[in-house]
Length: 290
Length: 252
Ligand SMILES: Nc1ncnc2c1ncn2[C@@H]1O[C@H](COP(=O)(O)OP(=O)(O)OP(=O)(O)O)[C@@H](O)[C@H]1O
Ligand SMILES: [Mg+2]
Image 1 (cartoon, chains in turn orange, brown):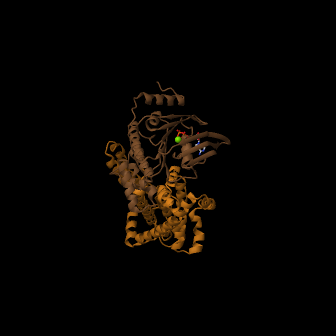
Image 2 (tube, protein in one colour; image 1 turned 90 degrees about the vertical axis):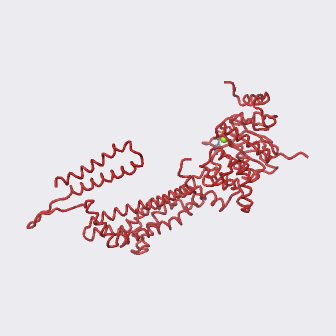
Image 3 (cartoon, each protein chain N blue to C red; image 1 turned 30 degrees about the vertical axis):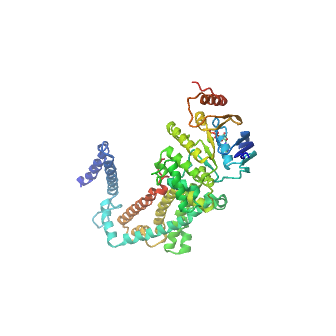
């Protein structure tokens, strides 16, 4: 037992050694080794914490037994296998993704045109901006009761909440993007006789696009944060539901942690996908120093 | 019959409000520019050169006085008189051909492509048609801006320090290029600069402005044929006179 308690610490020390050892290594190697070292340190810390919080339970007339409060990393592995095996993980992940992507698409479809209009036309901004600013600070989660009242405990409720969470970053981001277009671009366009929709299509929209893409990225991140919370409160499926359900039905904290890790992993994947937009010719100019 | 003047600036005054006080930028300016003339506007920084050009381009309105082009009061921007900006002129999201074709969007595609190809050739950007501005050098970007302006066949080109951001060698090359195009197209050019040499190399006439509140101190004719010999006595005479008018001695 003493050896087992010692081994993780040795592992951690070994991982920390990677920092001085890779100082002269090529960057490509550093990129691989250093995050692995961090992962080892984090896992060891987690393991140590889980072990330290175990306690002996002595009930009269029973043999004393060790109670695990938190699962260790090793205990979470079978939880993954269990979730994959009974198909829950895939089913719930698809349910969550469907809600996020639908809410996000609706938010973009409404938010981008409204943001363009409010950024460009002062009169639209006068009319809409105070309400956008007043509604924006209300957490999307505060809308959960209203949302359930309107849509029931259904996909609609979650989609609506995600829509709200994604809509405001997109509107305000697009609005700011339009307002920060250099005057020279607009002057040049007007000088060459561009007006109306052509001016929008040829100058305003492309000039604002890099910042719009950034706001989409933020909005998708918010949507993914919000879906879990919405599912924990209002819905009976999805990764958020998986987490509350695992706790409520039998204190399965190993499943809770496995669910959390999946949420993080899918979040990274979503962000990676939307970041690929930044490489398109139409927006690349806005992300590189010229 | 004498040709009517291209640009007539009559008693134009421009003021801006700043912290509740009036800032007089241009003070009672009068100037006539003839068709096909190349006029440089020279003056110290902040004297109102850009403001003057912006008013002629239709982006600003004079506070007092009148401004006419071809006998008509200026009412706003117009593709017949195009502005070449020092920076931010061309669109970073569009390719070279899309930038140059900006003023030709209403023309049929075939005609647009033909005109764009002609100007790509004229400014020496063949082979870079599909490039984005971030892939071009400073001088190439400025040539895109120039081609874009010329493609709409303007009869007046307004240039606000168009070569200011370039290194001295590229500036020299671009000046020669500009003169070559001007001789071919015969448009009227108003060219703002604060570089004395640049104005003597390019202009038929140089208009010298004083510091704010700005007035015209002098209008100097440069009676030298192109290409100009920058070692000639006349060149130096004009140059000295300009330095003197600007109130600086150029011997160091
Ligand atoms: N929109 C504006 N509002 C207030 N003041 C302005 C505005 N535009 C210009 N000015 C002022 O007018 C003066 C002249 O500006 P302008 O840009 O015309 O100078 P310039 O001669 O082009 O200078 P530079 O050579 O540095 O480009 C400056 O003092 C500037 O602060
Ligand atoms: Mg200026």
